[in-house]
Image 1 (cartoon, rainbow, N blue to C red):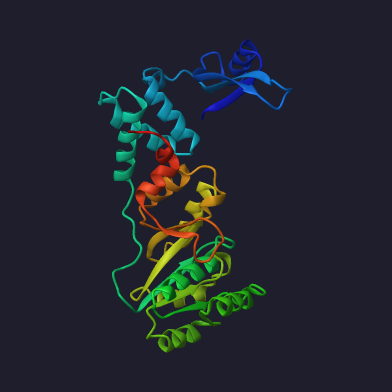
Image 2 (image 1 turned 90 degrees about the horizontal axis):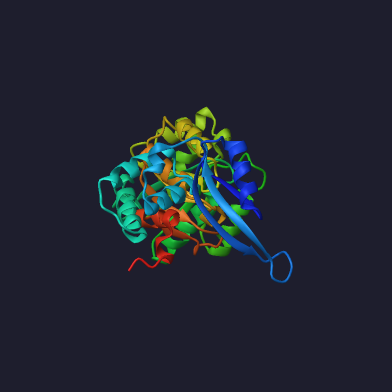
Length: 318
């Protein structure tokens, strides 16, 4: 793990690095800047990036490769994937940052599973949204339903979330404002009746309750839809990677069709999302980027996720 040190005294910073990371700590990068919060002219501060222990692999890396290593690690891309990326670059004669970034982007794009924003059916789709409490299932359902309605297609949201106080009342209020049809199913029999009732709809969105409340009978009723429905798992971009993997495991009985990453606007690093998509080998479906309905949702693309990590769009690679 890369550690960041700041000090007004270079020698003291190096002494601290050796004390905390060991005598053989490797300094990756050193630069200085003026910290403006101190006085009119500010003060000169040195920033050092270092890793513990002597790392022969890093020592042999060129400056551009060392820079991409630092970027990927700081973005939260797991060490295993970073090592694999570096191995793929070593044999290539890459001379500058532009070439390295372009090559890394190509390798990362190849490593991601395909994107999936639908199943090709023109009508009669049943989409089930799964996920932890607060991940944005209801808001995502409203966004997808509104976009479908704007295309002149018929849609309905069926909520299974009757245990959380006020949740359906809030959904009904939004439905009234957005002129969307919403229904509530208390049990499996009601869900089956509502699915039959709305069989003429182009898109039926099933907004489930939070996974801790997804009791056995509800899970069983969802499993009955395996051959008819598409199941998507929503994961917040701010969720810890370990917790996200545990969430996926909770739904191992359900044939997940893809992932929807929510709350990208609240995240500061996106490597864990890349790790999750690669290791779980589940297609990316949608990204949500804020609370606005329906504006803050976009079809997921592999290049968008890679760009969030490498920040390609703001660099001049030309």
